[in-house]
Image (spheres, rainbow, N blue to C red):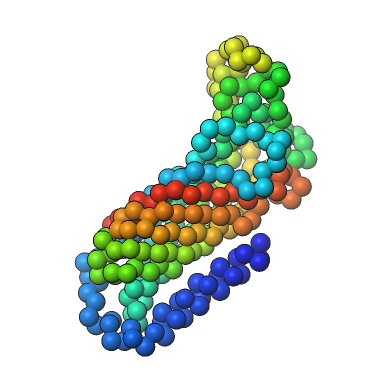
Length: 242
């Protein structure tokens, strides 16, 4: 994890230092009016979610999703207004869907079970959901900082998260051929197998209010020896404004 986090932090620090010490920025700082620009305070991210390093024995299904909401305070650099630092609170949610798989989130076992039930009775739909409270920080670059809503922009960052909830939602109990036995919804919640905190490196690029994002969790999702050694990732579209 340190091999990824430390270079990411060094990149942020280096770019920040270059921006602060850019001699040409002294000439530009008084010619760019930032009073009316949109600062991308509010961000909504909708994306696809997956696990890097997932074992072949775990069978996923459909499009797993990631939905994130952030409210960030944006601080332009006085010496170079193309650059800014954004920081603030947020909420992240991830949903992984499984195919004919039992997820033992509350089992009294040493590690979480992902059991293939394709040859026996099982739930037709199984979802593992996680909710996080997060503190992201971004180093941003806008090509036209005075008109941010109509500018190409880039951002690199890191976010620290704390796990609020982990749960499964199982719907419709069926037999091995897919015929419904019972129609009901079963919900179970437990955080005992999961790491309580996470570190995620982030990147965004796009135009105006729309950017593409990629997030990679450098810390393992599950505690050591309590689950598979997987690193979640997500990518998709960010809508920003205000």
